[in-house]
Image 1 (cartoon, rainbow, N blue to C red):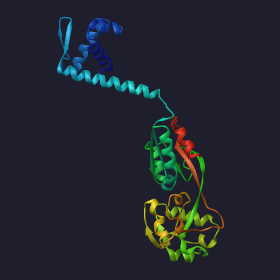
Image 2: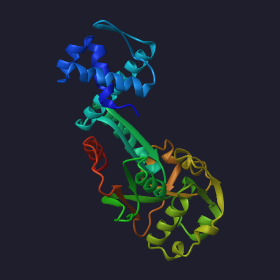
Image 3: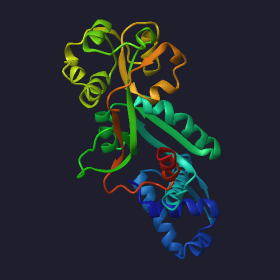
Image 4: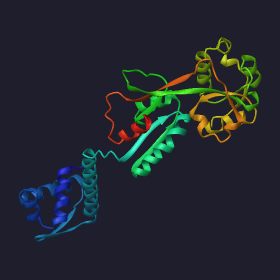
Length: 292
């Protein structure tokens, strides 16, 4: 590694063009400037300047080293500037949440970005375990999950809750939703289906539905694209369980029947970031959107 002090002296010499003036600018002696240049030449293994009386010319190797010294100086200045710069309306915001929540949050986050164009929104859709793994590894800074993670690794704050909906084709509206009906329909499977089904059946206060084994339910279809999960249901195929927010952006809601449970089922949401991590000020605006 080249000595940064020698590089700085060399760069200053080239910028100023004179040994004596360089020494004055750097509060050094002229022999000190010459010594730094000589040591840099020895470290590089090449002559960097060609001396002619009191003037000098850069060698080809000297031009390359000067360009490198300029780059180092620019990067150092940028680093120091970034260390002192925490603009609440500028920088990249990296967060992760479920697909259903992303449908609701992303338009609001884009509105925030339109107001403050220095912001960049990076929203990752992922299940709980990946969200926590990405926060721990620094891939994202904050996430929204549906269960409390380890307090030794993460700081968590309850964000609110969201209702879960058992959704069937419109043709079943007015019917009593029984275990036999659901088995006959078959489930539209998706990556979070097992979690949502178990949560809904356990908390809806219906002993018959609670007795259902979600793993033995027949599969009517499978899709991993959130915005398409309700498409087969709207066409009379299968049933599924999704957060209420997934219904908001679906264009054929009039073709769906939402079951009314004995007890409303809600899923708690938690805002999570890495413990002992101080978030930049730009996340204050993100938090306002999340807690809205």
